[in-house]
Length: 262
Image 1: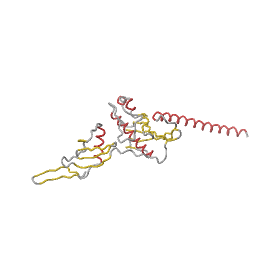
Image 2: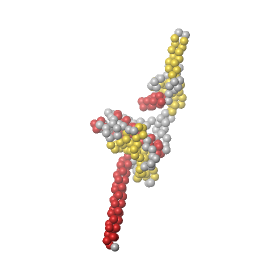
Image 3: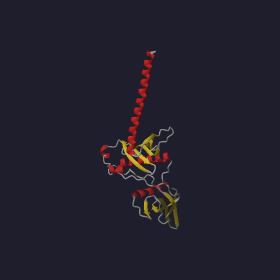
Image 4: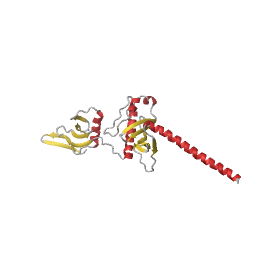
């Protein structure tokens, strides 16, 4: 009987040691992951990897996408999310982790995981560039990233990373991203043939005149931020007026009006 018990007991011991070792290794992996998550979300006490089969990872394109997602918990309650994103900076595969707090809606931190940027180029990015993200509200009409001097391409990469992560948060939290701008009305000035848009932006109304190429001409209010002007131009271009008068030509007693369907 003993000769049968010895191998059985040995096998059980090996199984127990294997399970304990597996749990121990998983525990180490979890703690390492938690440490990383706390770097971008300091209030995190625990996390859950989102691994549902039908989970939809958001993307702008193949080079700018979320590839890993975590729910962040405090006192066993969900307080936000951390996303791993790959983006296109000067080169591809700029990988960052970014944290989103749910209440208030602010970015809790951003960390570079790895990158393929030219070292001398990437070194131009100062700590102040990354500091701008900590505590930055993301429930705003115009989410703007201040570019790093001498590293514009990498700056755009971070901006794309934040943009796609914000889309992922909106999807996961069932939150609607505020429309950047709303067109209240639009008309054409029949004297100059310029286009006049009434925009609602950040709880204010702007009467903005654009030329027919949707370039800024004037506004009834002073606009100090060039990014807002660019927003109005791009939004009007993507929401064009229809059947505008392109030109008016007078030949003798005839007046020819050219109408273009935009």
